[in-house]
Amino acid sequence: MSKTEYNNFGAVLSVDLDAICDNWRSLKARLDGAACAAVVKADAYGLGAGQVAPALYRAGCRHFFVAHLNEAIELRPLLAADATLYVLHGAHPGAESEFVRHRLVPVLNSLVQVTAWQKLARELDKVLPAILQIDSGMARLGLAQDELTTVVAEPSRLQGIDLKFIMSHLVSAEDQASPVNMAQLESFQAALKRLPAARASLANSSGIFLGRDFHFDLARPGAALYGVAPVAGQPNPMRPVIRLQGKVLQTRRIESGTAVGYSHTWTAARPSCIATVAVGYADGYLRSLSNRGHAGFEGIRLPIVGNVSMDTITIDVSDVPAGRIGEGSLIDLADPLNGVDDIASRAGSIGYEILTSLGNRYARRYVGTVEA
Image 1 (tube, rainbow, N blue to C red):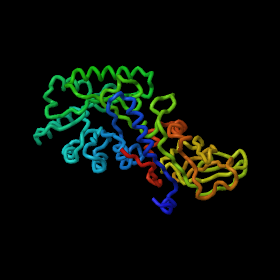
Image 2: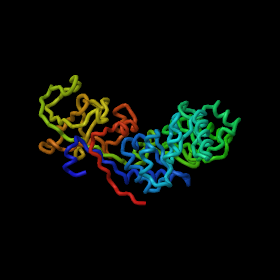
Image 3: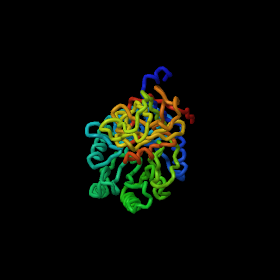
Image 4: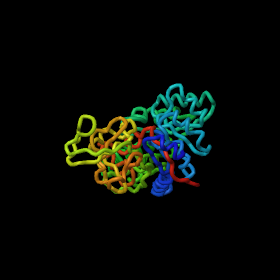
């Protein structure tokens, strides 16, 4: 994208592909030989799966997870044949043949999905690959205990299915002290003993940090790849991935006692300089950051003042030397000094939501050229 084209946007989102790949390598190094996948669902957590997944492939990743079938279909042409794409939601009724057509692997979450996949295998006279998911405590996706009992009692239900992995998903791995972690591990281990022998997968980003017992044969990191802290209350070992810079539309001097923005939720306690920046909740800058978020300019911390509106925020830039900020200046809204977890904490949210809320009105700039 040329400089002229950047001028057409109100903000610039820079994504560091090298940092994402370094994070993947760092996570892989913790696995003691287990394979390390990459979860690239939700457009790689809002950062662009079409750019992120090929970069991770070049870095050595061969297992990729998305949520929806359409996500996998879009990614398939961008990855080499030896990359495997898994769809976490499995196949919706009637969509099973699309998996075969596009060389995709479903995660089978229920007896209904298992039966439909087996039926297709029989019709095609093929053995079809799949992952079988077991619910070990989330009560969301995966075979419930009664369905697991049925599969164990009737092993013919898995005939024609090549089980690439048996998997489950951790509930609260970011909290290393949670007793739920060990309860889930024990539940998963018990299920594996009852099922046909297959490779296993349990750890998400945070699960990798729970230790070797949770690693099994394949880990599935997602948020940590994109810089989100994997362990609550501990220093973040992951590299920052994004920098978001908003463009100043206008600055103005206001007197003490002047109110700013919708509903006048902030009033200047001193003569101030206010910069209006072209980012708002339509761009994923959450309204809950009103009067709580902060920005930065040349190392100076600047508070968000007044309510976040649809297309703009207002920032108190009084502490910036006069003349340094004007129309067209870029102010940092997310950077290594103000990361996604910091923003999420002030917004009353989580880093996942900050990333996946990033809108499509930013000029996107991808940094780094990763080679194999």
